[in-house]
Image (cartoon, rainbow, N blue to C red):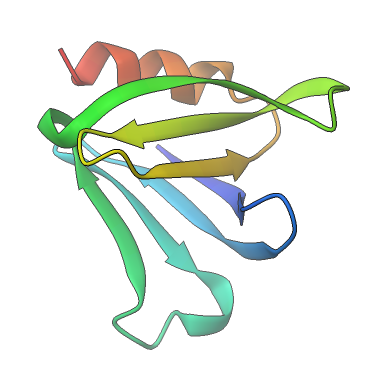
Amino acid sequence: MVVPAILWDGLKKLNGTLYVTELSVDYVLQDFSDTNLEFSLKYDEIAAVEYHKIYDLNLLGIQITAKSGRQNIFVMDAPSEILKTIEKRKR
């Protein structure tokens, strides 16, 4: 599964592509696609995945929390399929 997404920290937005593969969730930054700067998290490293409200308006994001405690918020169109796929694979 490949979807355009924004990595968001509440202030800054970084455009890129979210890849939900058989082994991991990966994120490649659009402006840094030719570098080693990317996000990769194996399913056994994921503690939780849940919807995230953007400005308390819509559920347009998902928040992935790693077992290390780090949280990553991704904004995308129609996040439900991505969330369900990650939930299924992290078990």
